Length: 390
Ligand SMILES: Nc1ncnc2c1ncn2[C@@H]1O[C@H](COP(=O)(O)OP(=O)(O)OP(=O)(O)O)[C@@H](O)[C@H]1O
Ligand SMILES: [Mg+2]
Image 1 (tube, rainbow, N blue to C red):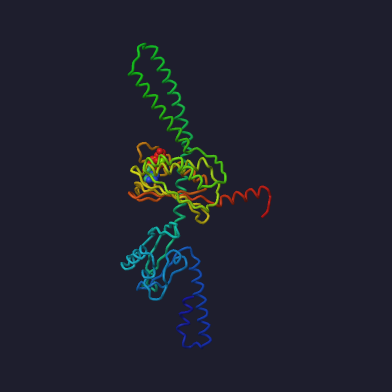
Image 2 (image 1 turned 90 degrees about the vertical axis):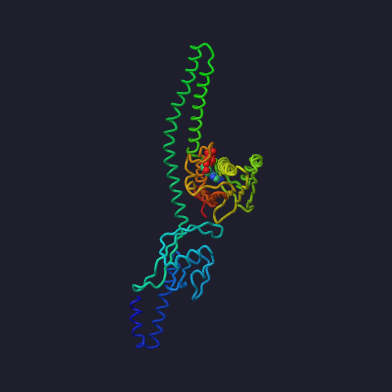
């Protein structure tokens, strides 16, 4: 198509007014089509000329980065966000190439992960500017993390069922034989020997401890049968906090509730949900040994109910952040590392999601999203069964 216009341009002097108009109309149509294509893409596209003036920004890019569009405006003058401005200025002025650079932005209270590519714009073997394309990889990343965790959990469940029973049986046998041994000893050695008794007690305690670990583990990974009922999450949170209020006060932790009163009711299993939320409170408490503030906020965000737990505790290092949902990962001496595994499982069973963000020394945020639509799906199922048409 470009060649056609090029040829027409060479002959422009020979074209009459009508032909020129036709040519222009046709060119406008082509540009229109290209613009529509660019605006329909789920990728942000920014084009700058050789002087770094922003010459094009498709709709997706404009949605990602608020900007002032105008002629002869350099990219960093057009953009509003300071951090983004700094990033692009640095890259463009140094003529750097960027491949899949990931940045976090916050948009309408939602965190987004973007992947940015900056490449030279080459026209007729000459660099005439810069092409920037930006992908929103938030969902992709979440999906990957979800899959990884689900896979971890699935392989763990299979392994658990086998291993836990394999351990439990011999443990039962050891326990019985210990008792028999103790009785036999008592018969043989008539006099009371406190040393031997102490050894026996240690053995018994250790067997008990192993038993408990196996039980905890089984609990964390066993399939759940949820008793889903429509309820008020705010009420559940208030009740749970009432339950631990005294303990939190003793630990000098102030608990702030910012509950959105207009929250719709959703389906959840009260017992499991309370357990999950309580686990998050306990973790926050453990993270604030000298006291601090725990804020629990609820809000409806699109089709989800968002529950945010923010503490002002010790935070989690970058390295540990990806491990905290793994079974048995703990940094606490008395922790089993199964708390968040349970939380993750409970939220997943409710078709929800949980994510974490943290800064060492500043605090940690856990965000839970629970779908409101769950309820609608249920109602449609019910209608289907009863053959009631909409
Ligand atoms: N709010 C938080 N602030 C800082 N670190 C946290 C927080 N929540 C969890 N963690 C980190 O994640 C780890 C795993 O948490 P998880 O609840 O799974 O186990 P745990 O609390 O160590 O033990 P338990 O099984 O008793 O819950 C913790 O040991 C801690 O390092
Ligand atoms: Mg815990």
